[in-house]
Amino acid sequence: MSDEARYLYCIVHSTSAAGQKESLGNIGIEKQAVYTIPYKNIAAVVHSCQPVPYHSKDRTQAEGWVLEHSYVIDQATKRYESILPISFDVILREGDSQIEQWLGRNYEQLWEQLDSLRGKAEYTVQIFYDYDCLKARILMADQELNDMQKRIENESKGKAYLLSKKLDQTLKRGVSAEAGRLVEESLVLISEQSDRLAVNDKPSWIPENFRDKKLLASYSCLVHKDKVDRLGEILDAINSLQGFRVRFTGPWAPFSFVDLQEMA
Amino acid sequence: MKPERESSLVEVLDRLLDRGVVLNADLIISVAGIPLIGLNLRAALASMETMLEYGVMEAWDKSSRELYARQEAKIPLQLDEKIIFKAFGYLWQDQGIIKRWVPGVWNVTSSRLLLWLRSPGEVAFEMSLHDLSMRRVFSNTLQRKELELLSSGDLLARIYLSEMDELEAAIRGSSAVALTETI
Image (cartoon, rainbow over all chains, first blue to last red; front, side):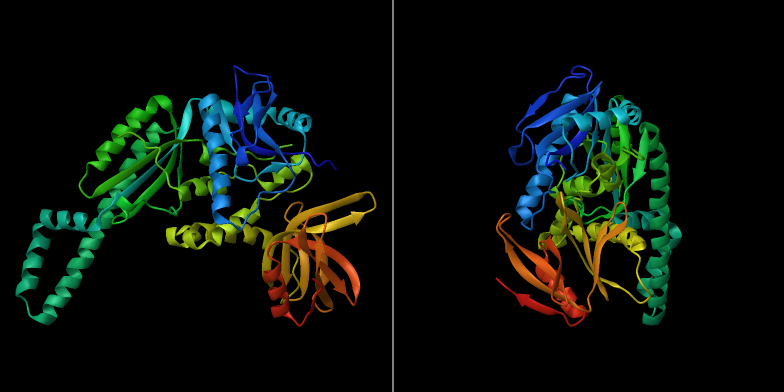
């Protein structure tokens, strides 16, 4: 059993440096020297390490490592044609030549993925809505509901209560119908600009300036660079609708769109 | 509308710990023959109070539950046997020329202590809690505290994990186990 191990950041497609080992500098976790292990026109981006996972109970240290990993992925994204990002703390207990052989054994699958990702990046699209704003708009547009609200003001306490319950429910249905319509329509438009689209779970974090709104939909989209502007225009249109807001971030490495299975 | 690169630390963590999982442990094994699991850091991160503030616990909870569900489905449990505690750790294996720390997940169940290797999905070590006693020893080579597991006074195994206190507490909570401190 060898004590040699390599921490794996990503796998890249490199035409310019095909077959050549490249040094990316001391940009790795804890300033480790990051370099490539090439096979044909693909390469593994690694640093040499002990065969022990990174482990810390110190939050700042652990976060630092993840950010450093993220930085290497960003640098690799700038430098290479396409990349397959690897999650944090994946360590291969092998030396360079075994990893090269492993790339060779899985070359077709890796190359197919890298080739399909060329010129594309992942973007996050989140659509938020403002309940009160949509409610007010529905109320304004609907004469019947308007009348109902006026009646509430003049009715006896008991009747007013029942009526306002009914009004609330009608408005709630109206808001969700409108929000639902927007999701359906926008999904079609966003999909048209995306090579692939994944619906995300509820995100763990929402920026401060969106917290007064409700999240309606969250997507990860794999978008070709030629289509990003067009997607931006579509999102602009949604963003300008009263009661809706869009958050658009990226480009990120294609974290949601890499699917490596049954590697040898 | 131009995409922004602005992203919070939580989002970066999400991507790299959750969504970035493009190589699973199975693959690592197929490369290396030895699993190396990035589980411990996730645990460390997830236990952070600040994460609670950001609400990342929800995401962690979900993914960890899924992960554990997958593992639990595989660990062969007896009827009425429940898993009480899990932690990433190591078992010292000394078989003549092969001497190594085997990484896996230590599970305390209602009746056993076992080391589960998610891949290939096997129990690498197990013993009944019934006659288990433990003592902490200091390793001079690695400069850390390790645990020795004994059964009726016989040394059965030497293990290491960072959540040693928690493991002991789980075992103590599960049954009456003699604990001796030798340091």
